Length: 205
Image 1: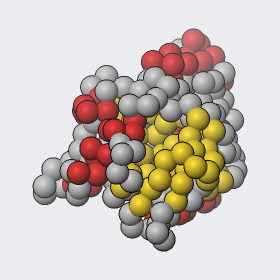
Image 2: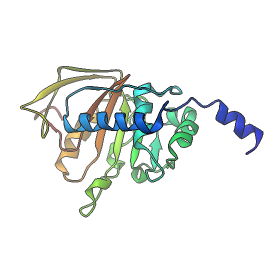
Image 3: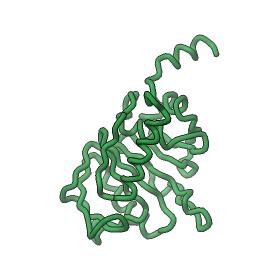
Image 4: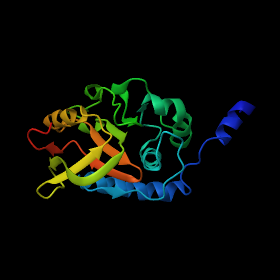
């Protein structure tokens, strides 16, 4: 390891204080968010994170990414946090959106082409991508009405800082089930899971 590499590693933000216990805790919280769509879950034990990543987004990345999960990073993340994510997770970076198991977007107003995401196939639908998107604010409030497994009746959510094209993409995603992508929206330390089973009320896609 040369001196420049050592200096670079020393300047990286630290990950979890207790990687095993903290990642297990966050993983349980992610499972809760995905099992109860529309239920906003608080992530605790947040790691330090290099901008533009928030603590909640970094916690999800450190928990979900590993050597076997190619990840596509939005330009802001790629420019400032790729070394941090590579060092702490070992996840290989990919420039091809369709090859990514995870897609990490720092600004929900600047989404990649969601039609290019991996959707899995008939034999392995679980190979669909998971997209992690930072947004400005998440609330249980009038905005978008969700239905589907894990929701009793319906739930209304309001999301600030998310490009409008996300919603028709989410509607189209449901039509492909069991194929499709899964979504985690993150605002600060709050996460909202939107699995591919989610349905938007008619007229909201």
